Image 1 (cartoon, rainbow, N blue to C red):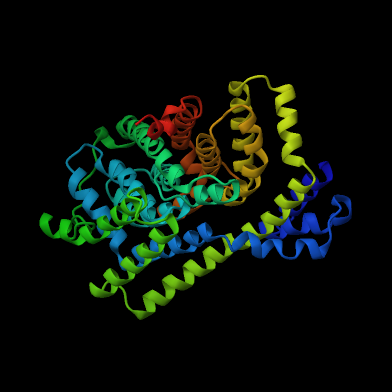
Image 2 (spheres, one colour):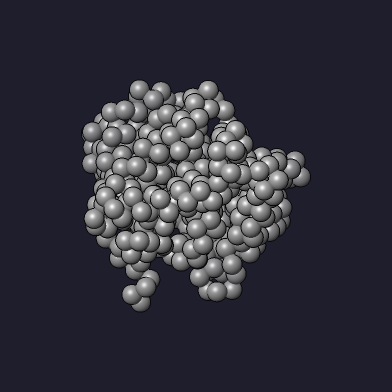
Length: 427
């Protein structure tokens, strides 16, 4: 095992793609693991032919269509209309918009890209430091995973065998909790970063509203607001599976975008192409991670980890503390989806030995690894937010720690208060 993880670390340091790393590590050691190329050849196809995984590229396509058609901007304009009278409103708008985009894209990085690209210029015009803007948008992007539907949770549910619908329900209170914590941090920090704690009023007017009447802003955003209602209502109402809801969401976004003339044929083609490239990249990682995990299972690695944990760790509390530390480190150095695919099957059996509910453990796992998007070197949220706000990472450091501390506090509550994730079991 030491050689396996040593090779993995070496390939990653050398810049090998994640999918290549997972596959190559096993192919180079087939003899040591008692495997054959014939036995491994069908595994990649078996891994990605899973029906629930079809939801991943479909949710990505929905997010692309929403962003390219301008419906995402209409959602943010509505948030601006509702919250603009509050002091330091644009920070609250960013957090609210991130939650709404999370309910559409299921991806943290996609949420940061969509919201940051629209909100960052407006916040800069109102006097916010660019480093603070990037810190806020990158942190609020975590809601892209906590607000259902969530691509990492789809991966966890599909690979570990847990109900995806229950995982989506379990994220509702954690999403609300994390939102409140970020709102509190913004409320405190805005008094320091803004002159007299108040946003400036740019002379060129409000670019988000664009001079529209409030009724017009609400009408424009109504089609976008119906999409998460359609997706989540269909899932929780028992009408659709998450995969079917993703397909319906795509059809809805295409029909509305074309009917309202928000997107043309060229825009549709670009959205489909972008979603295909991103989605296929994730599926290739899933395929090769499946080879890696199959080799681990055949050689009893998850069982050995569970046995070691049961031998040396005496309580569920100690196990959860250890897992939190390990996952935070893994999230720092590995991409979230790959980390879910690797760590979920390895750690879930150990969690089961301690009587930890697999739904609760899935939320703990996903939230920990998502926080890794705020910690370099694999801090995708930071890089996307910095580019959108035209800021340097050094500019973000004075502010990022406060949001990171809030995320850790939220993670601690999620981890050690099972009711926060399993609330629906008590209804």
